[in-house]
Length: 425
Image 1 (cartoon, rainbow, N blue to C red):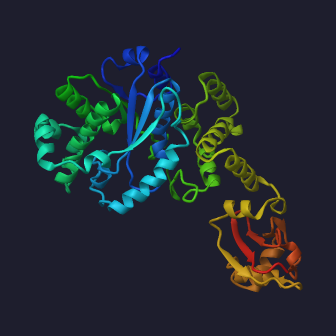
Image 2: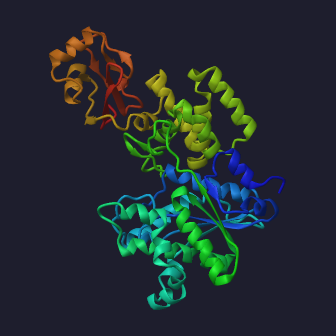
Image 3: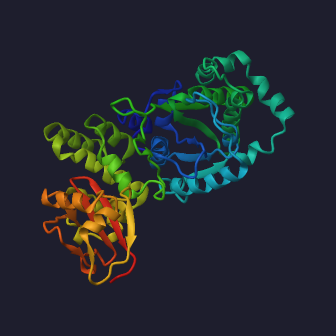
């Protein structure tokens, strides 16, 4: 390797803390490293992208990445960063979630790379067969209660009124045991995670030292927030998912495109493979002409391509044109539905003689009455497929429907109604 992956992490701002000596070891050895992913849903979200990119960068630098999908610990729940205990998942829910997560991780990690293929493992494979007495004797004896209480993830929960159950209190031991198992099976000596995982990670390092006499390391990354202090990945519409069925590629693209100027460069470092020279150039562009949003556009393109592929990126960019003046009549029905998926819609039979536009405005809920629609038209505020309506007696005929399937009514700049045509004339 010509460069140290630790240095790559550092210039990208991805190092919050690390165990002593890690930087030197990464400079002279190739390691096997792992990160755990919590299967609380059938999709990961953008908050998972930083650890995913960490594994992908490690692999590109010649190290061997392991992704643990916590089918075992997911049944327990990690108290780290949580104010209260989560509802426990059933076996069936965990298994369904595992399938979705595996598919998403496969977009970033190469499972056939030689000599350092990525692996996905499920810790249920070794946690389920555990016998409680043997676990307490062989693992539990290495951890004092005071050691566990001193961990931030536990301490913070004890300060909450609800406290912490023994179930979640035991999570630290189970994660430490994960590290030991991966050390024994795959020679894994490095665990990564968010900064709230430091206590769990160092517990695993301590266990490997006590039980195997080996040296293991940890590296934790900062918890990403926006410049406004909002938790990364949370929007007014909710969580931004990696699953296209939960967050469309268009909405995903728009999420990144709308990044605050203050966040654009840090996010380019975190979430793309663009090199330092390219990012510096984008930083200069942002300083000179922030209104062009070149940095945000590069960010949106790169991350959308990584997560959803080149075809979906092209579609998202094409659909974005609808928000900035592209004629609706030149767009596909699918793109229009994707862009305006939150607009109310109705279905109508559109006969050859058409339907009065005043009636469509009322039936779609855009206006309360025909008379108010007439006033809207006279004021120049009603649009049919983004063309201003000037004739209050206009009838909407099948030839006005886009691809014979869709009519878009707009009031003012933002309020829209989609009219889906059940027949095609």
